[in-house]
Length: 277
Image 1: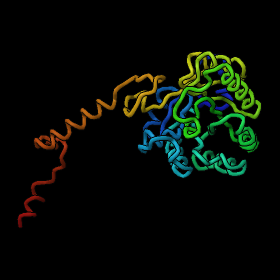
Image 2: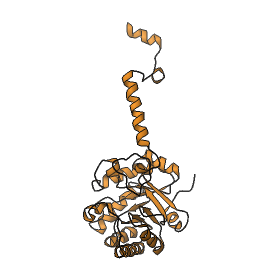
Image 3: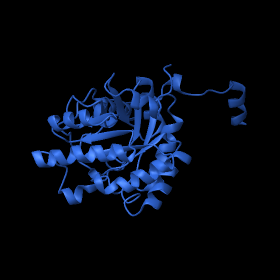
Image 4: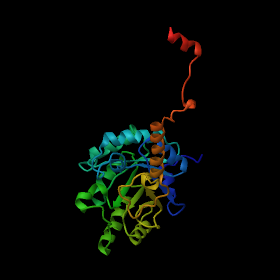
């Protein structure tokens, strides 16, 4: 078993071996992800969409996120667990941001938190870091801003917008972030950001030049079929296999072939005879 991944361990990988991160929302998936050897497990607010059937990430709150983070932490031995700050858990003021970030560590047993936003979130990042809570930043496409952005759209597609993202990355590093998620950003811009900061960048739809990559586990395993973003690679089709297994179960129940003798519990013949008295 490799040593436990820590925040300093993540930072030390800048420019070295690429970092890997997957999502998990329960102890079962966490154990599988941890056994795969990934460096980090993100308890993402994507829980709302892939786990709870919501149309976006806005409909999940702190209590649910802490609950699922606690489950993931129980299923993780080696990877760094990162709790994703949900919508309106940090946007209102620094004090509430610190209080909610602290819940991820104290109750959820996470090792760090992630929050979305650039320049507007600098005071939040500084306040949380000042409370000794490690912060992973997130810029580019920020799903919690979907209403403002007008949908899930690639960000930084012009030179001006790209420069703004580079500037925001630098500011987030200065504010104390230990790493940055870059989502749905053109690969050349992600490369510029990666070269401009001394902390690791974790890409999702941001090309190969980042210091690491993250994907939603349900996408990787083929368990979520409502839509597949361009940046997703499906490494398995477990959803199809699961449906096939469940169909076999249904057929055997209907045919009376399940449960068979080996699936049943017996009792002594003498005891059965007593029932006839």
